[in-house]
Image (tube, rainbow, N blue to C red; front, side, top):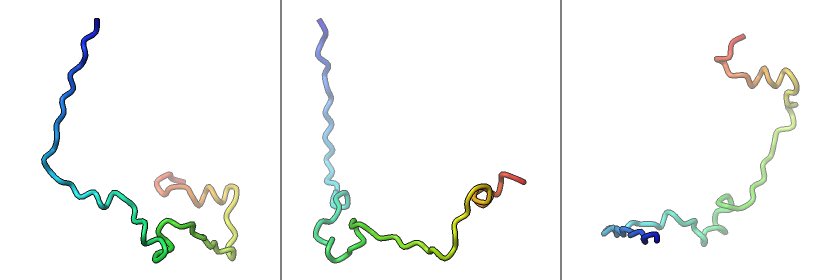
Length: 65
């Protein structure tokens, strides 16, 4: 027969402030950027790099030539 394991319970005698752990619910109307859906505008003036040009531009500087 297996013995029941004893569990130690330690209760802290401090009172933590947990108000920062919860997202504010009432300020969603005041600040639309809080958790609402955001629209991202991209500049279409400059075409993006493709192919080998893209990889050359994204290569880290320590990689070498």
